[in-house]
Image 1 (cartoon, one colour):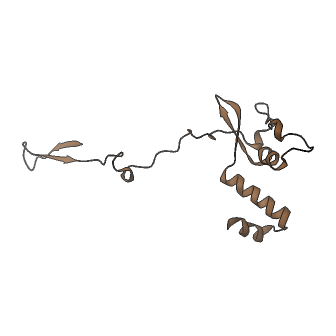
Image 2 (cartoon, rainbow, N blue to C red; image 1 turned 60 degrees about the horizontal axis):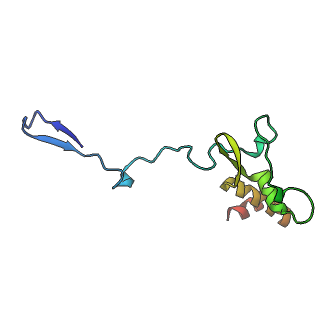
Image 3 (spheres, rainbow, N blue to C red; image 1 turned 135 degrees about the vertical axis):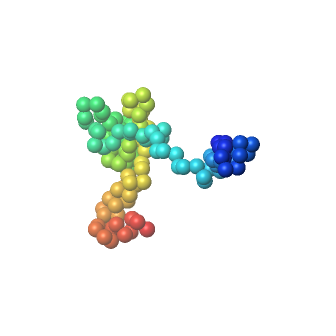
Length: 126
């Protein structure tokens, strides 16, 4: 609360101006600035793989090409996921963003249904 003295009214009267309390009235507070506190802030992407500062390591239970390997998970980790960072180093926690999921859906719709272009895009958007 800020108090202002009004010269028109006299020295004995003050006008109070209230700023809404952001805790009790969260809708009145400005939105929080986007921060880097999420688990994927600054995460490593597929484009970072095989650079001088990052080499993506697929977990052993998804690596390889022979029986018992979950090829879908290997593909998701290798091609579409982000890998989180802890203290500037990869932490082996993989995440899919909404854009990553859309990319996966487009690939699946194209390879399994044969729908590409507008038809495939329309189906993915539904």
